[in-house]
Structure formats: structure tokens, C-alpha cells
Length: 517
Image (cartoon, rainbow, N blue to C red; front, top):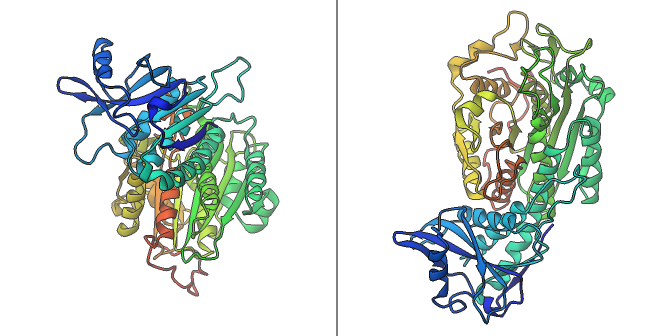
């Protein structure tokens, strides 16, 4: 990973290969945006050079040219920031994207100085995170030489911001490392990443960081009655797992439970996916990867909040032993589900994990899943859906996403769609109306969350995997979607901005697990 340092030295004095500056899109042409240490470094030469090279300052645009004579850097990379900012300057997301574009453009470079307009600790953290995310590439299976990430990036900051800037960079380094870990997991092919190997990775890494890790194998799942996870995994030669990983802090007053869908490969099962839909189905464990990374980040940042991650891991395959449409599963907690579509498997593994997570009586539960194509059709590939039956908690999750720089949108849970999940032979069916299918999936999951506990469902089917070209700090392949939102939610909760309602006491008829709605 790129080494990040912070300095207050003027750009003109830095002996570096490249210096990165920001350029805005002005009404009469490109406008250099001064960053710390650049105001007097270049004089009037930069605007002339930019205009001569045809630069516009459009967001994501890059223009390279030799540095003016007499200053330290050899080369200048001007990165477009978009329209000229108002008094508030450029927001964190614009800076993150600019830094990401710069480090992706400069892959293979040795030393780079960044002089983007980052005058606050928040802005410095955004730039630092953009550097680490933009320089990411997945090379584990490459046999040919690929350009390495930039070796060293020096961020130029104002003298009065040095100490908070250093702390901001340390935070970005942790978050960037764990988010890129999630990307690596999503990009790993299913012949190497399957329930057992995924669980082993969580156990090894988690324990390296002092976290409590428990793994339930197929025998433990059978003994515990985890019918959803076992049912989905029964068609594969690679048996399922349920993994619990927990960060606890002695000063915590709030406990969050994060539940991730971990289908390491999704063929659709007997309800086989059509040709063209299988090639990226290794990504169907992106929710579990996000949960794993978020718990690790919370621990490494020593956030004073308890965070427990639940990874429901299974491989959904067709075979003689596979789950059939029409089968009935007895879920963890005792409820029965009629399986009408074996390709609606993610909600089955999540349901088991939600009930189990709820038994520990956390203050709030968030599940994360690449759950439905319907949500992707509705929101596209850059926005994930947030569903909840607690408006206040839904708004907290949306605020966390916005603060973290991820695009999320609130979606409803229409009660009239619930009837489509009624089953003639079981408590509930796993598939209902096709129109509004993403909302129906949310309604199914809600059935397995105790009444009264704040809960949110994040459907990240669109933005979890980028099938197109890289952009900003987003690579092709796994993106690490939802990691930043979960970490921000934990960070907010540790600062007293989390859920205020406590888990209801268990009642005699529910056993503290679920209530019919």
C-alpha cells in the first residue's frame, strides 16, 4: 500500500517526481485552485500552460506537463475538480475523487506530492483515502508485470493543521486498508474463496487484531437448527459456515450488530440463472466482506462502541442434493419458509443470521447484501438502497452514508406487498411479487427482526461491483461498497449519535427471537 506522509514544506522545495494540483472549470477557462504551499510556487505560468494544453478543469480530467524551472518537483499533474467552488470550498467527495484519479493516473510513480485544496482535517482525510483507494489494483492472479501503486505520497498541509492532519491520515490508512481488503475478497474467484476458506481468513485476521472469532461449521449449524444457511448450502460440495467476529471496547455504551450476506458463488441453484448472469456471481459475498472489513476497521481505530459482525457464508449450487422449489425449511428460531425460488437465497441465509444476532440484544442491527436485481434496476450501479421500519434509524444510516461519501437512497416497505409472501404450507414464502422485488425482499427480512429493535437493510446489488471502467477512486471489480457507511455509523454511535432505543425484553411467547408482524 502507498506510504503516506504529511508536510508543511512548500511545494517549491519538495524534491519529488510529481506534484498534483487542482484545477477548476471556470467560465473563461481552467482556473488553478491553490492548495497549501502552492500559492507562491508557480506564479502566473500555470494558467498559461493549462490553456495551451487544452485543459478545461472538468471533474476527473488530468493534464501533465513539466514543472516550471526552479522548483523541486519534476512534473505537474493537474486534476480537474469541476465547477469553481463557492465559499465553502470543495467537499470531501470531490477531493477524494481527485486524489483517486491522480494516484490511478500515476501508477508506477515513485514519489508524488499532493497539493490539493485540503485546508481541514476532514478534507485531508478525504484526500488521503482517495489516494489509497485510487491506487488499488487486484493483481493476485496476474503473471505479467503490472504498474505498482505510487510508492510514496507526501501531502502538503497548512502549518496550523499539521497535528490534526496527521491524525486524519492515520484514520484514512486504517479505513483504506480494510476497504481494500474487502475489495480483494470480492475479487477473489470462487474456486479459492468459498465458505470454509473465507471463514478461515476471518479467523486468522481477526485474531491477529485481538478480536473474538467463532465459526460454526456444518455440524454445528445442523445442531443449532440453522435451516436457512444449511438449505442454501446443501447443493454444494463446499459446506456453509456462520462466522461471528466481535470488537468490544471497555468504554462502549452502544452495541451494533452488522449482518452480511456471504454467498461465495451464486448459480441460482435449481432456479438457475440465465447465460450472462453467472460470470460475476463471485461478488455475491460483498455484504459479508463489507461487514468483516468494518468490524476490523472499528477495532483498529479503537472506536468506543461494541460492533459484532455476522457472516452468513454458503455456496448456492445445483446438484442432486440441492434445495428444490417447493421445499420447506425450518429456520433458526423455528419459523418455516417455503422456498419458491432457490435464486432468492440471500434472504434465507440472512434470516438465520438476523435471528441469531438479535439474541445478543444489540442496540441496532444493519444487514448488508447484494440482494436483488430489482434494486439495481431501480437505483442503478452507483446508489444503494436503505430500508427500515424505524424512520429515525434509517435517517441515521443515510446520514452516515452521506458523511462517508457513499450514495444511498431511502426505500419504503409497503405493507400491501407483504401479502405476496404468504405461503399455503409454511409460515412465509421466500419469494413474492416480482414488481417491487427489492422491497419484498426487505419485507421478508423484517419478519426475522424482533419488533422494536432499530434495523436497517442495505441492498448494495448495484454499487458493490463495477463492471465498467475505473473512475474516480473506484476500480473495476469489487468496490468495497458500504464499508465506509458502516464504519461511520459505528463512529457516530461511539460519539453518542447512535440509536437511542434499547432492545425490548424477551417475552414468553417469542423466546427473545422473533415476533410475527
